[in-house]
View 1 (spheres, one colour):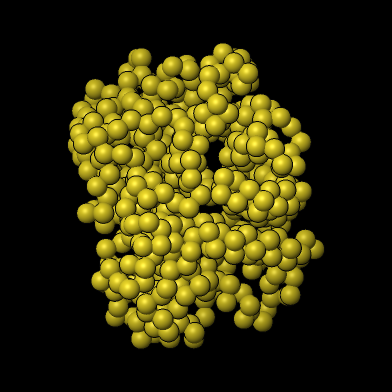
View 2 (cartoon, rainbow, N blue to C red; view 1 turned 180 degrees about the horizontal axis):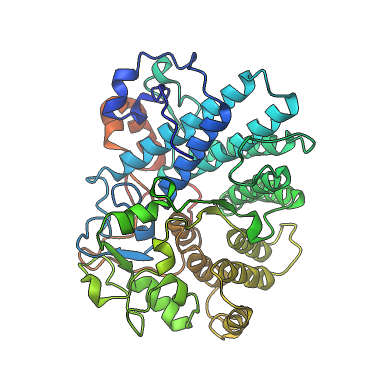
Length: 476
């Protein structure tokens, strides 16, 4: 899975380029050097896993936004001053250039490959589309309105217009539906499939699960569209066990290690500890996942003060498993789908086959089994009055939201999404400034220099380019 070095990083919206990209803008994106589609797919998909799994404060601050981790010697990011740190710019550039562009070119290469049979082309194109849709949704959920229909055109369009976020969602639902319908179970998929090892039925379940996730995001803003697509996805068959999770098998060698290995081990630094927000919730519940999520250097567990300077030795440390180079990357899992099904059961109008309580228990169980907890620990935890669905306090959103948020530990972006969607659990204000938790990333500063008219129009359309401007589906 070594990174493929491409000669065509110019095929982006100009605004998604870095300084180093400009010298290559004269390369024709419509006539690339021949690179096999499977290589490009590997490069784009691994780049997505790397970006979403990183905890470098220059690349990814989602674990901090979710208040599951906090910083030690720095407090800029936990106090949400990310625009001056160019974090939105890095994330924007990475997903557009190293993920979406590679996936776009992978699809072109597949269609032009004369050695592939029609069924193989259909399967490979559908697999690539799944990852494209996942990445596009992630960008929308981060920024709101973004360049979409005019994106990735390089010098053909250097000032791409922004598309309405809700309209992008509708198109993504169409694209993922087409991807599912185009699968040919009698044909092979991608060569060197490092996700599902050539199992097309698992790719179909992933397509259904991505569609279901998209649909459930719309539950508060477009219930009828949400139910239509969610019910169709449920009928197709969703991820039904941890063996079907969207994971990447990182390796023990440093070149292909999990990005946390570089951030936590190779850096030789002690920049992060679990945040008191997260630790306190788990302590209150006596959650057995503490033995995995945290080190036992402190008994009882003590979380670092969120948004303040923290002395590394005075607080609980991150669990040993997150220092392992071959920690699997995880972008979608059985626990996530289970909690979304619990939400669907509570809302009504969705073709679910169990109660919200059963899906809620399934989500907790899937999370604990993923991290190696025993059946005895799981049963005891589910029986706790503060965990049991019938006796736990709060509304259904608060019950599901808290456990969903806990289960998304090490998936900071989804944990942040859970908080934005369910308004639960309650998060703290950072100690140093008291700034509110961001609802989105602001647009990259570079966009205002290179694509000013379009980014200004987008900012106006969403209600202002501010961190407190909610994404369109975040209405409660």
